[in-house]
Length: 354
Image: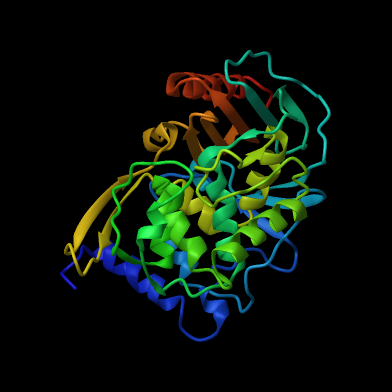
């Protein structure tokens, strides 16, 4: 292998360590017996913290922490926002009431915002109507991959079939590209590369069909009654869910620190091996302009777009010492999507502190 920067070498070393010993060492284990999950916020340290997580094991594999209902103990661990060690007992219900609604209007077709401290809805617009979710799908893809407790060091080669889907989509990847499972997961969450997500599903125990079954089974387990997944990328317009159901998915994704870190990584230079076309560096940036700017504290992020879905984004954030989950579906332009997101974030900043 050619010489790589020290940070790259350390990431590869951490990924390699995942496969050593028992399967638990590849587990990226989150949460202990008390079912606690850290609420941490993205930034420059996201990738380095993900490396630390991937190199550790507490002796147990990844497991489902909750089913989209009930109470989860959430602890903010990020000292940079001045709220270190604040712990919230957060209750989420299947349907949200209305309390202290934020006084805004949005231009996207469907929006849901919940106060993640109280579990109350603080803004809804067509939030119970199932809509195409596009690449928001990849959060579920990541959870199913991680639930599989697979060897994250395993090298995967992209096949021509990984580039075939319900729609044509641009990609900077090529057939024959070789990366390990952890790198493909980072690429799917941060850059939203469709072949990366398709390959992760194809290399799941039981193959692609077993992966799709696992995605829909997990959606049912999370209480996502409006959800259906037809492919792991989001290019399939049949991938639908209501905004309120996607709140449940974002909440569940928050139990995986690797999803937090990878989805909020601003940029990364991937070393991509390919026997046919030669090795190269793939410089990738996060698809979220809010993550790239670093102006907002974002703990989970995923964007999406196909024509049927419009411009979409989901995120977990913390504004004015209050955590919130935001789902925006069906914006008619990127400006509308980010305009609605900033409008919500600015409105949250005017709410009372805890």
